[in-house]
Length: 237
Image 1 (tube, rainbow, N blue to C red):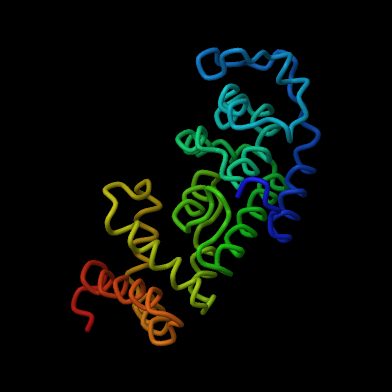
Image 2 (image 1 turned 90 degrees about the vertical axis):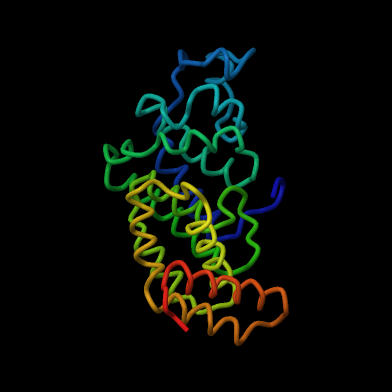
């Protein structure tokens, strides 16, 4: 979604995230990986306005694994670049966030939780979503896990949504969980797997299938229900 405006709820939460971390400045001697960012310099990066730093800059400073205050400085921009769909270079480094945010203040962690919650709730309002990297449930749940944000409230919101779009995102999540070799890190996989196996999952898929507005949606939900019945809830009629 390059160039597209973010949904108001997401944009507002993102702005508050920027404000929360505004006191952290980029040091003039910020470390720069020469292999990741050939031609980039510490002075050049430090003098660049934060919201003009692209994925290449964030990768060059290893924004997701940098020193604590450097990571805070770049964190909101990491989220924004991932929302833009221009953060492919960062996707494989997001897991390095895991365990780092526990050292942040409660207010900082709350701001992270707020923006991820806003992204999640926006995801559930439409299908397909247009949220860049965060356009599917699995990616948001992974990000929440890596940021040490509780996942259960997100799953609860997906269950309670009661909309066709939420059911379709549930179908995609089910497919990701049951057909990918390593869909999630083990603690998260166990939590999602236990939640998916509940009977409410089948009822949510079935009810959405019955009310489906078109054939494509009906097929997706029917296939998801069959996958759930066969793999997650054997014996379900």
